View 1: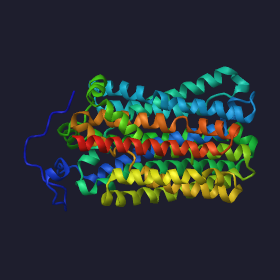
View 2: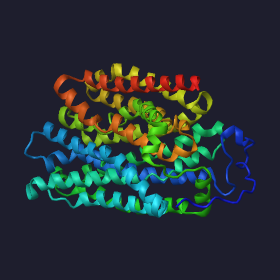
View 3: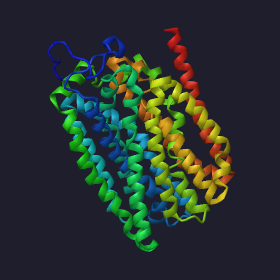
View 4: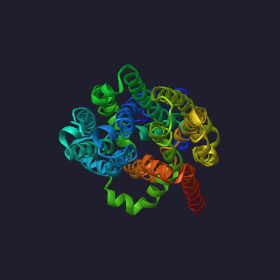
Length: 447
């Protein structure tokens, strides 16, 4: 049931802002503070990314040995990455299922069930017996929990990024849009730090036998904290009322695609360059270093942590840039930058430790600048009625098309045909972004 609208009393603008409702599409509720929404968004996204990076790092470093010992290391890693992709395949299904749950029982119930499911699925992996104990059933259970992770992540959409975007002055939307994206580097830094500590503190035998399980336990505790931080916002009366005013409520999927289907596709491809780069600098390099390099995994994880800190700075910088030149131009400019990076990325990855570290640091810098504005750059096309569901499904499809199979495809192609395919993969994402933004711009001129 949709919350009842607030009384039609005049709404004051944001403190310190002179922008009119015509300038930024709506006026802010006096009790709805953008800063408070931003904190909820960052906390929520960081917990989700921690869960997913814990799994992603383990899929490169641990799962080939634990669940696929009957295969050589390369084939075992490829199968591990295939299971990694399952969460992104089912994520749109989770969005649809939990939208129905919200329509019937409310946003708070939906979010509680989704985050407990996400934490339980992640923690459940920590208890999985190895292939040596349970045989093929261990692989089936790993895939099952991975599917649950994807469904839960689809269900965890709370609409706070959309509320943040609509509740801020138009000239500051780039700044506030990037805040939620900070959850990605924060989640990666924590996950990579935990794995680096365990890898450095334990023997390889102990790490593979039991040490890798601890980060999965931690994920459940983090999710509980994140749940209460987000529930504090989404069930509060002023936020519920503001969501109702802005029509940030589920809409039928069929109606969405009939009315705005083209915009869902354009939005998914508009972020493709950033999403294609996402797992190419986080998950894929770990597998490549383990298989084809003598570099220490701990040292490489530390380089990635430094890279993630650079990415966080890039995300912040993207807010300033987007507020000056526009979010679409920022995405387009960074897509060109990623296309240029694709030209020498294979050379860096094949140039030993110094080249590989440079690949990571440059890649993370580009990722931060592009990812900071990747979410919702074209969601204004949905209008009020379709924005809530449209933004969620756009993100789902962007992850599926750009990031889901990136480690699998990149490792498979590069191991069998050479590192040049790494550049080809990144270039395809950049081209997808530029084409989508061009189509969106052409449609805007026509309308």
